[in-house]
Length: 230
Ligand SMILES: NC(=O)c1ccc[n+]([C@@H]2O[C@H](COP(=O)([O-])OP(=O)(O)OC[C@H]3O[C@@H](n4cnc5c(N)ncnc54)[C@H](O)[C@@H]3O)[C@@H](O)[C@H]2O)c1
Image 1 (spheres, rainbow, N blue to C red):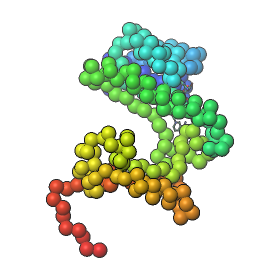
Image 2: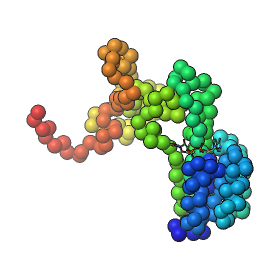
Image 3: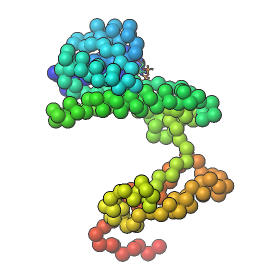
Image 4: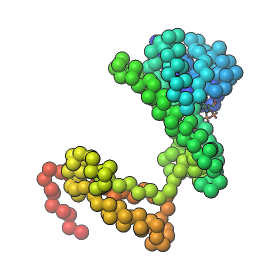
């Protein structure tokens, strides 16, 4: 019984995988708050589980998050586990998807998960323990053709610290220990942008391109080892 005496919130818990997670947590002793928009399904599941309650929650609403967590803490106890599971999908390519649907997906799948963490983390930190599980998708690790809001995948440029008003505010510590130990110049990023925008990139798509002086490789060794002959 790994969750004996613990309190868990499961968003999107009224049906699907969220309902399964709620059942699994309850079976191992947790007092579960099932949070969803689907009141009938949520209430029915809560009635089926021991020490569970249903809370109507639209995960995109900051104020509602605050009042739901307060209500859960008053009735079930401090929150030990948050499963950010609520999610939606609207299929459509970049041309097909309406901006409204795109925003809705980001609002539920991304902002909703952020708001959940934003609301429960202060209490978890104060108590010195807690666990957050954010449910994403296998497609998040690859791409999902025809569902641009759910998993966008395009050529993207990933600059390290670059000499601009934003980059100059960064501490030199950020680049001092990278393999190319200096700040980058805007023109070094421009060369990649022009390449990707040109016909030279005719066989390049959905890729992630670093221009970071090796920032992501990790710290430069204190003493250089001799270069390997080619
Ligand atoms: N089913 C799959 O094949 C699959 C694959 C990969 C990832 N996922 C992800 O897993 C999670 C669960 O998916 P599922 O298949 O159980 O989906 P589902 O549609 O069966 O359940 C999603 C639940 O989220 C709730 N929800 C939607 N918007 C909400 C909001 N604004 N506030 C609160 N609740 C909201 C819905 O009412 C529903 O109960 C989602 O995040 C989904 O993106 C699903």
